[in-house]
View (cartoon, rainbow, N blue to C red):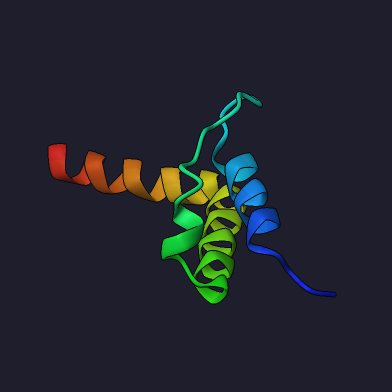
Amino acid sequence: MKIEKEDLVEDIKHLISINGENVDINPNYLEYFELDELIEIKKNLEYKKINQDAISNSFLDELFDKCS
């Protein structure tokens, strides 16, 4: 199965959307990013989406420690 840049950009747009709102990404980004870079961006966004609660809790704990 061949992965296309356009498909990856659509996946990335979905991952960065909030509450299902459409997100516009400049189509010229296809010119700047290589396929492997887009795959890495998608993987990072998927990781962050899956681990969002843990990341948020860690950030809040760190912020609380700095403020107390």
